[in-house]
Image (tube, rainbow, N blue to C red; front, side, top):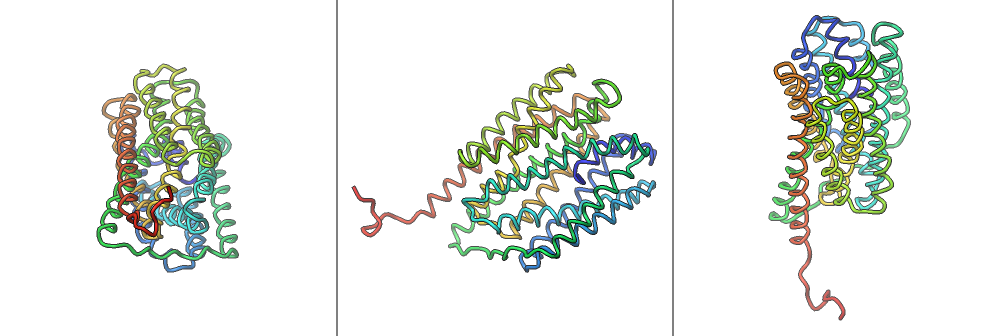
Length: 380
């Protein structure tokens, strides 16, 4: 809910602070900077243990910062608050993914991670609706902040009472394999730069895009945002079932191809309303499973530690910084069509990186496979 409220809130925040579309995109950037820096620091902290205490502290901090966002009108102060909010989100994201991975074996973590990220989708789906109701009921974000800050405090209290999974040490490998694994981790990080950039860019600007193409009445832009998150959530529900029946590779490649086609259709639709609704839903359903499935696939190949997960989450934050801010600038300069076209380019690149990851991981697995000897030769 924290990650997805900023897009539907941008118009309200622009009105409160008196800034334009391009400048308001800096709020997305500030949130991402805080997310990146906190994510890089959080991994080592989780590796040292006491994971639930760290996670609880981040949730409580998010509640306090949300109250600040509610009452502050100065744009410069809001930038700082959004950076702090992003930092709290980064610590929570590293914690959620790391501790869930540690609680399962690499072979069985896929459905659990998809369930975790399904909860993200539920929050992201409900957040724009709650923001919309809050703006109507109290002419501000008061209702939204009360619900989400209260939820953060309840989460913090629950985490303090629950035992955390034991931390995982980095596995030992020979120098050649270690170099290959670092290269594979780098590719995974590049994927998340692109993926989170396009996801955050779409979610953050689809509301503005709908307004610019005059999609419908005053509530249509918020509904379109919810349609994206509904598709996103539905995709993750289906992925929980699919990961029990097909491999991570097939799910990753298939969802990337489907998402590329959907955003390509949206980019060429020239604002046709029916196409916008359908393509947005399909795009959301296609990108939804990609984050947890790639985490699960990476853990199968790399046995992720907290530090490795923090690099992935920090890469995600970097993507969430660059692309959304860039889209805001392009929207300001070139109009509504710039948004889906930029997302389409990023999606094509992400699909190419997935192919490279699959090829690299298979090459690494072949190098790690022991040679056939008289003691392990297959029986014929």
